[in-house]
Length: 343
Image (tube, rainbow, N blue to C red):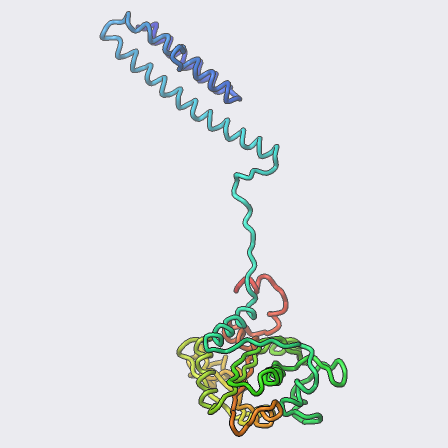
């Protein structure tokens, strides 16, 4: 028995040393067969157990099982090491492994101004409005005269314009789309349309830009009143800023509407109580609106004694600044990915 125990311990010691030097998976498999296979060295020794007494056989069998388990664990660890080394070598050789996880690609997303424009479009489409588009280079008639602003009218000074020639300019507002829409639809009604787009004025500071975005709205039908205008704008403001928001209308002046109004929305920070953001007034100026001037309707070919209408103009940047808490309009155009990544 003692000789068999010594032989088993010798096989264990020798196998551990041999397995530790293996550098190839095929060689590892051959050695596993050599020591643990059906005709392996460990099995060969156990064949002599028939000569042992019944008292000695359990001792030899127990040691043999322990050695087999130990060697199988050594073989398993060595196999994992060889597989890892082979994978690393393959990666180094090929420089790319299509089975590995790929590098994360940064995905783009909508600019905050585009998000606001799309949101406003969705709101008005749900209210039955059409979406209209027009040119950014306009003639003087559509930009001014057709909107009750004849040449030398003092109200033109309110809009510092980029002129290309005496009669051609970059549009200063989206209101020319009122003229174009009515010209395309007269004498048909009702008219319900919004017209988003870029406009241009000679302004450049923290709250103004020489290029910015507006959304013009126009409605023409029978029996249209200021109540329709206020109800429409209240619904839009509540969908943009939240159901608790209120609006107020303040008298104002626009040559193409009569009466005209500035529209304020209640401050969402203080709930209308007054804070630094709203200059302690509880209100934030948001847009201009009014009933379409009878002269504008008549110049377009509509009967102002039968039809009425209202119009409004959103400044998209203004809404985005209020909604997202942005205090400098110029960041919209800096193309800073750190800023854009927040939306």
